[in-house]
Image (tube, rainbow, N blue to C red):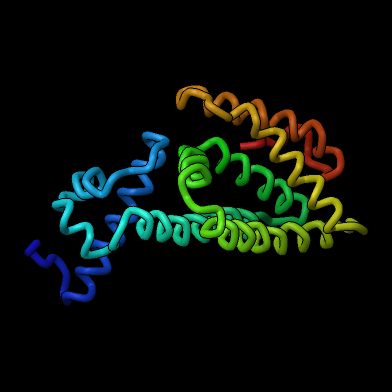
Length: 203
């Protein structure tokens, strides 16, 4: 039995489960393939049989990754929006943080999950993810004085998707330059609408 490195058995179990989830997520990002229970165990320092103490199958593990990553991605974006100091900057923070996510290794996680996980398992978390993000975007647009926040929000989301297409299959070392280029293109389109200062730095 692995040495317990927590005040209680329950806390040890929770920490180990978290470590297994994080390992599976890292492997998804690094390899673009579904990790085996053996690979996850090796990453954490557990025997393959010990991984089954936390997840009964690779399918259950991937389902847990799905349930974990979408809320964390939504939190990353909503936190960035909330930190911005004006309605215009909140809209820009929404755009920028979404493109940051598309340009990050997490996109490899999303792409792999969409390929290897049952669509029925994915559909609920994806819908919740998108629904959660629309509220702060629409609130920022309303505060900006936009008369059609839902319609404008849909256009902004479409613009983000289009701007992120350059990231598909790009080498890791190219992500930063592609992200900067995408942000500059989007800023040229929406900078006037948002009344962004011409000297304002996108980063």
